[in-house]
Amino acid sequence: MSQRPLSPHLQIYRLQLTSLLSITHRATGIGLAVGAPVLTWWLMALATGPGAYSSFVMVFDNWLGLVFLVGWTWALFYHLANGIRHLFWDSGVGLELTSTYTSGWIVVLTSVALTVVCWIIAVQGWLL
Amino acid sequence: MSRSSGGDRRTALGRVRGLGSAKEGVHHWWVQRLTAVALIPLSLWFIVGLIKAANGGYAAAAQWLARPMSAVMAVLLLIALFHHTQLGLQVVIEDYVHHEGVKLALVVVVKLASFLLAAVGIFAVLHLAFVS
Image (cartoon, rainbow over all chains, first blue to last red; front, side):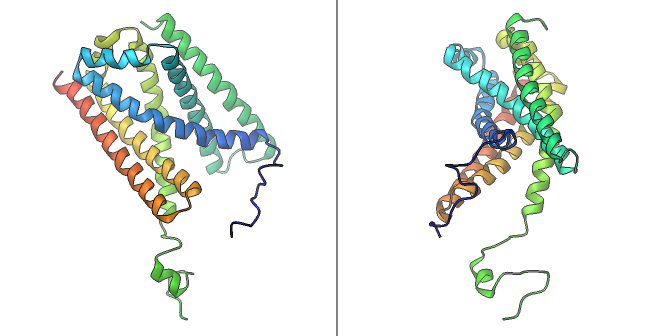
């Protein structure tokens, strides 16, 4: 059983945008699943009080914490945008080869743009 | 040997061992999509609220989530998010973990942990809304 060849053969497989975005959807999903307990932790810290909340903030108020927070922001926007792309496919829309590339690039660009916009607004405090 | 009605294509031995399709795939697929659709407005609401509260410290975040409408949205978000997460991780585990025992154990851990984290999160939101 284990001697049978893998398909796609990963050593010679030429990655395309479509397959790269597909595995990225799964990767961001796993990344967000790692982040989900942090959401619960944040809520519990809020419910516990200012002391617990400042302990939570201290964990993420450094460059490594920022990398994780920005990473989760992008992962969320990517998974959201590509998830909507999947929902269109489920309804039979946009399955042509050219459409999958167009929608794929839209997903890449919107996820990066929304991440940048969110963090600029958050840092500047424009909505306050 | 004779096959049962209802399109069960498994052999008698396969049925006894409980392997093969459990006929639950469609439900899994459907609920994954249902929670995905729910998460579109819920996650966008959360991000906007989080950015608004980001620079206000503890008080801003606590006051935001304590508002009735925010609390309802946060509870809905936690239900949809952890249900969607547990369904997604189950598929990942089933794809990559081939040892039956380890696979089952991981799926059980993921489902129970998601249930626990959702419950704790919902409790925290209700505590903010009713007590804090």
